[in-house]
Image (tube, rainbow, N blue to C red):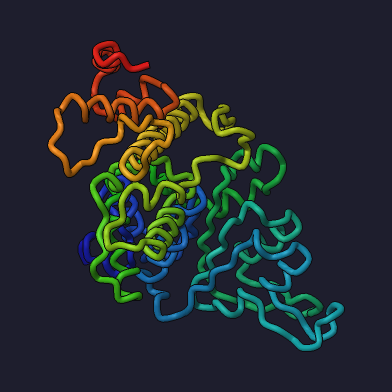
Length: 368
């Protein structure tokens, strides 16, 4: 199977070098039973890559069971993983298999494993080392043959250093480590993903006429994508659902982009993230570019769709009449200045002229 066939079969969208390198590694390690640890921010598609590893392995005929360790309350996580006997705790009215037994001969995907409590980590390590465990309330061991794929959006080495993750379990899991880069670091994949999700939405909703405009592509390619592929998918589907036309423009997406982080008090304030200085600077630049783009598009929309009521009646010109160009130009400048509250830089951008030219025109037409 070629790399392209592999990507198509398992739904891995991307033509960037990063994606190609990841696919090559996955195709190489999938055939073994070695444990795999997948790193990546939330929304980059860690489960898709885990599915590809399982689907290309000799265990593909069996189940891959996915468990989000961060979504299950600490008190019942052990029961969910290892099962329990009847009466082993309040509410245990029947014996129940855990995810290890359910995924026997297959693959168990432990997502957000960095959220797993230390007490559960001890029992997980035992299963990895001995391939056996005991249900809660049982005195009998159960043998299983399960391949483990784990994933985390945290740096587990840092969690080990902080005493929040067991070192022995970390080394046992990281036999092969795969790092999925965030979407902002593989911009050449954005358009492919946009088209893919729009096509899927169109097929499901019988909207085969939907297209994305060039200005929308430009906006979305310059966006930082803090929510990665998950955010991109949601943005495309929401824009398509809300659109009253078949063309999704930049305005269709503008209000759907989550520029601000929950850590921000004001969108104009810098954001502290636990990243390197270079990455922080790059994120702030991306956000500043998006804000400028939003301002310009909003100004253009206002200039096209509205008439400023503050303009005196002698400036109102019927567009059906033949009038001198300087009258139209003067009116356009007055409108732009009114809508930007006399911000000459924004008005010049709106009019697609230099700020120096705008100053000259204001003097020439005696605009006050």
